[in-house]
Image (cartoon, rainbow, N blue to C red; front, side, top):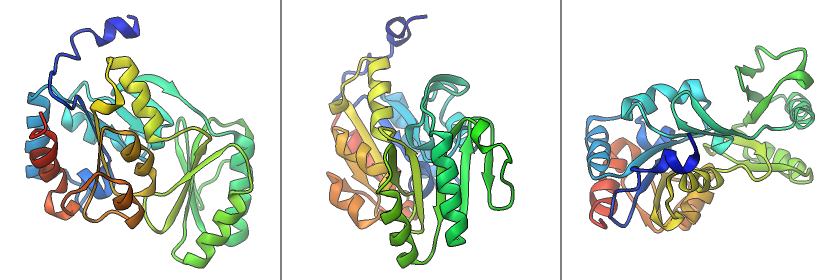
Amino acid sequence: MSDKEWGIGLAYHMGKYKLLALDLDGTLLNDRSEISESNALWVQRALDAGIVVCVSTGRGFLSALPFAEQIGKDTPMLTVNGGEVWRKPHQLHRRTLLAAEKVMKLHALAEQHKTWYWAYTVEDIYNNERWPADTIGRNWLKFGFHIEDSEKINTILEEIRTWEGLELSNSSIYNIEVNGAGVSKATGLEELCRLYGFNMSEVVAIGDSLNDIAAIRAAGLGIAMGNAQDEVKAAANVITEHHQQDGVAYAIEHYVLKSN
């Protein structure tokens, strides 16, 4: 089936917004990693209104999958910060790898600074406690550092910024996330728009961390969570409630559906 054929019948929604991209941690999910009853209700109302709801996360596919399936069997997914674009669960459209040579350098940097680190390959996730001997032979997607010392975060960031071919973000104030250059939730959303025949002006993106900023800026409506990092709030058109107070439900009710 061609991309054009796949999109036929999906762009029937005639409201202002046609695609709703939801980050997971700190956004759709509460502190127990659950979709609250209120969030689930308003996500369903968005679906009932003909809006395509997309999971947009830094998580890997397997970690994000249960939440996408909770939304619906045809839920599109952006995983590892847009490194993977899924038409729906288990149907991969595009994958952008992080060069193994870069992962080797990032791994060495993490070991040098004695920080916690993790990294996704296409098949698995690795960290300090389990690292493959054949780093160069794996298909990598993302590398992450967890650091609770802000001075150390800045030192590592300064080093990585001198390297080429990388995209830097975070999913909390205590981490650094590294993808290949050009990989972001924004570029992932642009690809979904191409598949569906939508424009980015018809997209709503909701998130809380630096890995959401590009999408929030590129979307027709960018919404920051009440618990979002200050830079994210500054980039957004509007700010919704805290993720512990059903901020996604509030955003859908007051900004997404009211605009339609």
